[in-house]
Image (tube, rainbow, N blue to C red; front, top):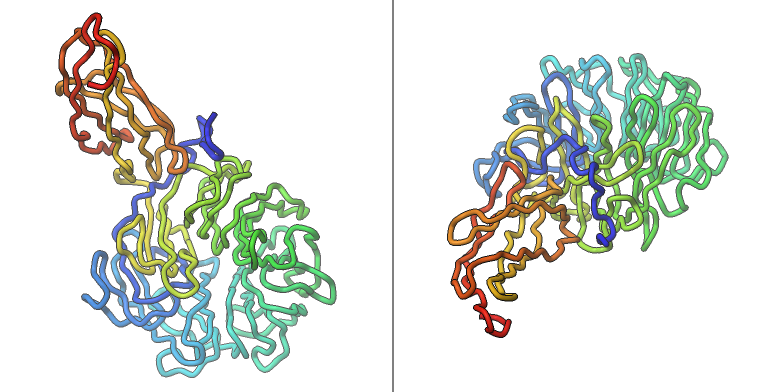
Amino acid sequence: MAAVGAPARGQTNEQSLTAAPMATWQTDGIVWTVAYARGVVYVGGEFGTVRPPGAEPGEDEVARENFAAFDATTGALLPCTHSFSGFGNAVRALKVSPDGKRLYVGGSFGEVDDTKVYSAVALNTADCSLRKDFHPGASATVRAIETTGNTVYLGGDFTRISNQTRNRIAAFTPSGELLPFKADVDLGVSALLAAPDQGKLIVGGDFHNVNGRAEQALVALNPSTGATVTSFPHWLPQRSSVKTLARDETNFYLGADGKGVGIFDGRIAGRLSDGRMVWKDTCLGATQSVLVYNGILYSGSHAHYCGLTPGGFPDGPRRHFLAQSVRDKRILHWFPNTNEGLGEGVGPRSIVMAGGILWAGGEFTTVNGKPQQGLTRFGTGGRGSAPEAAPRLTAKSSGTGKVTLTWRAAWDRDDAELTYRIYRDGALVTSIKKESVEWDRPDMTYTDSVTAGSRHSYTISVSDGVNTLPKSPAVETTALAAQQPAGDL
């Protein structure tokens, strides 16, 4: 029987991205947020410089204070730059307007270049200029931004904004005029998702009460008034908060962060139309960001246990990226990874899809075990990730003219099925296919028939169909002759 979480046949190639990271610029600190518009990826966080792919800390650094922009296709650093400083000295949220013409920036900062501001501004994407009409002053950190054609929503820790009382959430016109929208949220807002087609603004965060009623970490509000329109009782335990929201045409998806051992940390899918739950996974390991692409829910977290979720894994090492089928929550075979990195040691903090390339930012300092700080990206082209843990053969004469070869299956970050080729004296003897995952690498065997008493040298190689690892070191053995007792030779 396969171990818990072994991938089901037919599910192994559902995802479209490879797990091999593309060459990407790096930061010298934490990336909290990434956004995409018109061929440009914008990055915000807590950093002072960026450096080229492969550069070590302190090498070839370019000044970028908490904000940078990159060509979404080539990854090149762009001249679009502003210094976000003062207050908490951090950019926490980026969101592009539906027409792509404006980039809204939130966080905890007091200046943009030499302009006094309070934690929220807007830029023109055409020339990267700071807009003069959107400078709402927030009393505390802005952590989430959402936009529609005529409204910009801000969420965070503030209780006053634009000199008016607004408890953790507010709405503005695109030109910065405060709207009558008002909701009373008792604790911080971390995620906003507009569903104007359903007459809803979905709100996630650390809160327990909204508009005088118990609403644990998730609520849907009227996008014009702020009145509660949908509650989600029993979706989340009291010590679980919502960090991220995404949607497709019919569903919305949330990522949770639990406080304490065993508190829900995973993902939930709900129907936009009526707010009914579609599915809920059982993973542990705080989820920080989710996005939907081609029917796949990608997420950044530090998941360490998904044993009761289809395709999931037993408790063990943290896996910082996951891909799941939006249909049935099955975890698909896509396992790029980072380390915990800086700060709170979470790893990835924000992901965005930019022209078929997934960009991820966070606290990490390695990707797939190699140095890479703050940023990384994954695409659909290239050779993908090569198999890990090359197999090593043992050989044992197992009968007259018989040699049994044994090895442990390898694993691959983006291919479940691998091909093993066995060579006798340099010539291919057989080719065997087998599915495996990092946490379930079964022992494999092959029995070769040769002339009794003959001596041979065996090697093995493993391939994912594109990448083939070098052959293993050779092992030699002599097949038993007739009348000879079986055993190691």
